[in-house]
Image 1: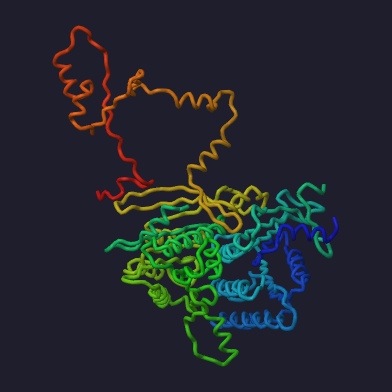
Image 2: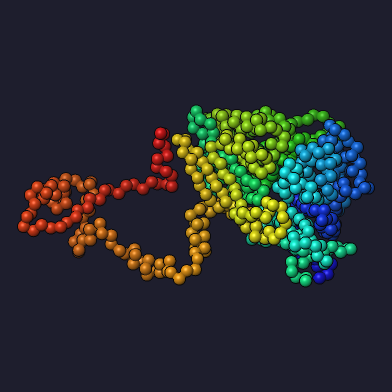
Amino acid sequence: MEEYGGGDFLSEAMGSGARVVVVEDRVEAPGAFALHLLLKRALAGGGAAALLALAQPFSHYDRVLRGAKGGAISDSFVRLYGDIQRAIDASRTGDNTGRFTLMIDDVSLLEVAAGGSVDDVLDFLHYCVTLTSEMNCSLVFLIHEDIYSSEEGVGVLLHLRYIADLVIRAAPLSTGLAADVHGQLSVVNKCTFREQRLKAQRIWNFHFRVKENGADFFYPGSRH
Amino acid sequence: MAEAAVRCLRDGRLDGEHAPALAVASNIQCGPLAAGAMLHLAAAVASNAAAGKAQARGLVIVAFDRSPEVYLDFMRRRGLDPNALNRCVRILDCYSDPIGWNQKIRSQQQQESGADLCSANKENVTIFRNVKDLDKLMCSTIDLGRGFAGEGKIYFSIAVDSISSMLRRASVSSISSFLSNLRSHDQISSIFWLIHSDLHEPKFSRAFECLSTMVASLEPAVVDSVYEEEIPGNISFLEENYSKAKFYLRLKRRNGRVKHLYEELHVEGNDVRFVSASSVSTEVSQSLLPKVQFNLELSEKERSDKANVVLPFEHQGKGEPIHIYDGRRSLPEAQQDSNLTASALLDEVKFPKSAAPKGEIHYFRDSDDEQPDSDEDPDDDLDI
């Protein structure tokens, strides 16, 4: 299977109507490769993308958020949201009218930046979601699922699953480590009222293998 | 079609009582279907109002989770024309700008400060910008409802989608008082809301159930233990959960009796429909009937033979016209038919025809009872 053939496999599962994509990953199976694929996809169609890269050291937004303290948190979220709106407007100038994609890497760090205030994060995420209906924008959120395995911290993760149209979940193989399979990926496509497709398959399971410049996807058992 | 619930919402309040309230409870496993259920209910209530069949003149939707366009689109697909939509549907949009950020940003950009908490951007959509203030939310909701045109006292219905979003910014007690104030408001005909019960402690959703007269809970069609334990594995068998769910409705009647109904909710593409339990169960029994060596089903011939069996208590006529005592025939006519009148029978008892005692059984059939004209319980309005 060629490199891009694998990407198409994921594309097929994703369909086209998803506006809010949530990528869940774990320490044992990082989902960054899925983010890279989605970024490529977003840029391929002549679209524009903004990466809210909290996990990266060079981020401007990172500094904006970390600089804020206490009661100023929600103010800084407003500013951040304003920045995103401006970025979208800027990308709309000229003849570039493709879809705009906003990626947040990752939501768990937003929570850290907000000083643990789940409500502020959810308010911010809600405003991001409103962009999908008002400004033809799509969203990709990365969240580390295993941080939320304890009972009390389930809030943000569950809320994200509610607002997601599409959940991509990377996890280690349930059968243990393998040399040429790095993990399994399940894709759940929840699109109900936006897509016209009848009786479409909603749930997909693959195995994946991360390569230097992309990833391979294949059905379980087809590669041994 | 979730008929029972829609009928209660349509009929509205009685004088001196609180408005009927329906709580729709759902969880993550049937998340997208809960939206479908709400859209279906809203469209049904709105079209009843538009057709003038309901007590309410219109429906006010307090929308937190979905853009107003989603509702309007769905209602258009359900056959409500733009005229009816404008007349009978108002949406308080708490989705686009719930805590006023957009306005803040805009006013910073334009150096303006005239902050208006409510603004209408379309004919029937009003944006609300401070969802933390429940008193204002209630005033705006009621103001919208008073705007419906009509003569005499104007009633209206309210949909809240969803309580879970309200709970993020307000306490349980304030939302409870919001709901019960609405229920006791004398212009409100009925109210229904959605709650995602797994986002909150169980006691929260119970507190709201206590405020309602009907509870509809959505449960996944396929229950799995794997997903709950968060072990990612083969979850393909859950596919069914994304197209249908179980819909349990519990409604409390005015006489205190509780009725349970079960239906299935199906979502296909853009459409939502309810399948009643009886047709579901026959489908299931046909497909689930185990293959056994005994013949459990009747053939077509056996079925028709069975239908032709004459039951023993019916007079079989033997060629003569069949007389069945119906209790309504006038007396002279009955006297002519001396065989079957009660007096004739009495005579027979007093003066038995000793010569030829016949063994006869006389069956007096009561006049047929009237069939109830709907599926409703005939004893419904008994106040015991």
